[in-house]
Length: 469
Image (cartoon, rainbow, N blue to C red):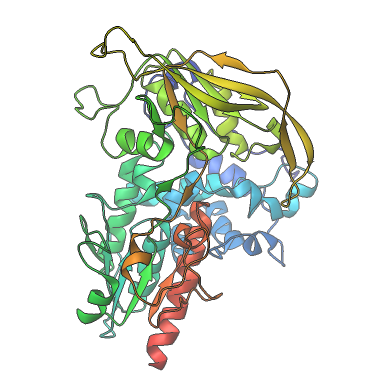
C-alpha cells in the first residue's frame, strides 16, 4: 500500500470563530483518522523517533497498537514512560524532537506522532473505567516542590516504584505552568486535572497553597521524615527590558497576564479578576508564551494585537503551528522592531485625572540583522532615525523568565548559577545531599517535555540514591 505523503490534517475551529472564544482550537483526530495516520508509520528497526523523545516513549510500539484499533493498548505503552500523555500530545514541540527524527520525514511529512499521542490519551480518558493499580509501598517518603511538568513526572515515576510521594504546590490548583501559563484554548484545564487525578490514583498526595521557602523550608521537609526532595518550582520570575515607562498602568509581564486569565479565570464574564480588556495591545517577544498572550488578548476583546519582535520571522522561536494560528486569527506581526520607551498619559493641570499613568503608546525603533552572536543567531542592530510610535493601550512583556530566588535564599548549601538556576549533575543531584532539581528551576524557561525529561531523570537518580542509602 502506498504511503500517504502528508499528515492527516488536524481539524480545528475556524479562525474567525475561535478568535473570540476560549474553547480548544484543535479538535483532535477521529478513530478513522488516527488509524490512517498510524498506517503511515514505517515501524523502523532502529526507531530514531524514540531517540528524539526526552521521556523515551516507545513510539513505534504504541502506533502499532493504533493500527490494530487497540487504543487502550497504545495508551498503556505511552503511560509506561509518560505521566502526562494528554498534555504532551497538545503542547510538546514534536516537530523539533520525535517527528524531526522520523525516517518518513526524509522524503515526506513525518508521522503525526503528537496528534496520535493526543488521540490515544483522549480516547483513554473518555472510555477507560478502571483506575490504575496503586503499587505496594516501599516505606520511603519523597517530597516534590512544584506541581508543574517536571514535578508531576518525577512524582508519577516514583509512585510507580512504591514511594510515598507528596507534591507541594504554591497555588490553589495543581499543574504549575500547565494551568497558569498555557491558555484554555491550547490546553483545557480539565485535561490537566485528569492527569493529576491519575497520579492521585497511584497514591501521590498533592498539598496546595504551600509555598516552599515560606510555609515550609526544604530543611523542614527532611525533619518531617522525607528522605529526598525534588525541586521543580519552575521559572516564575519575569524579565523586563528596563526601558522608561515599564511601571505604567497597563504594562504586564506575560506571566501575570496569563495567570490572571488562565488560573484566575479573568476570561469569564462573571470574573472579578482585574485585567485590561479591549483596546490595542502590544506583546513584546516571539516565543510560545508571547503567542499565548497575544491570542489571549484577542479573545479578551482587543480590537488590535501586535507581536513586536526584534528579529525576523526565521528567528522567531515560537512553534510554527502557534505562529500560523496567531496569523490566521489576525495578530499583526511587527518584526525587526524593538521597543525603547512606553509612553503614558499625564495631565499636569489635574493630578486626579483618572487617565494619569496609563499607557498611551510605545516608542519603537526598526532593527536589522547584523553579525551572528555567541549563539549563532544574527544580532539585531538598531537602524538610525527609524523610531516611531505604536498606538497601544496595553503592553505585555514576554521576554523570558528566571527561577524564583525564594528556595535558594532559604536553603543552605544549595548552589545556583549566575542566572539563578539551581546547579545540578547530569542525574539532577544538587549540591545539597538528598535534594534533586529539574525543569525551569534549573534551566530557566524551556519546554514542557524537557522539564518532564528532567523529572524522569531525577526520579531514577532518587530511586538509586535511596535504595543505596
